[in-house]
Image 1 (spheres, rainbow, N blue to C red):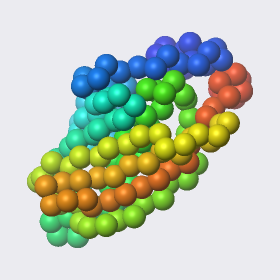
Image 2 (spheres, helix red, strand yellow):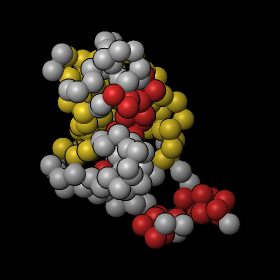
Image 3 (spheres, rainbow, N blue to C red):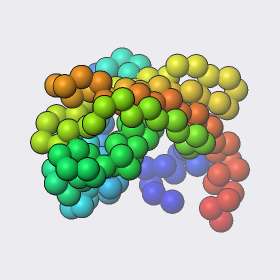
Amino acid sequence: ANPRFATRLSGARPDPIGVDGNPMDLFRDSIVSGRTNPMGIGLEVRRQGDTVTATTTLGPAFEGAPGRAHGGVVAAILDETMGYVLPIIGELAYTANLNIDYVAPAPLHQQLRVTASLRDRADRKLWIEAHGESDRGTFVRAEALFLAVDLTKFANDLD
């Protein structure tokens, strides 16, 4: 296992992380937010209290319809941004369900901003909501159900 997650896999809950306003650099090799991934989207995520805000500007490699970001790329940005809420609330979880409402096209060559926060929780269930905006207005809204991981079971499953 990645040394970064070793204490998490011991069964201990992760400590909340991220300093307000500073970039959160959790998954350096991620195709979405990894700054070391040469094929990556280049998403930069910052914590603002209990909320995360992610920004990126997409170029032609991520085009769907002419001049517009591919919907799958937008979905990946949403999932990654929503996932960044987990460490600031001290949870390790996975996406169980992601519902997306594409409200308008996500433009290329303009900064996209996605904001996500925890809406509700019940036992292992964590509902996180997000929305995306550009200078043209809101282009997407989403809600996801994340399920918190039993860290001891997760560690045992890796063996």
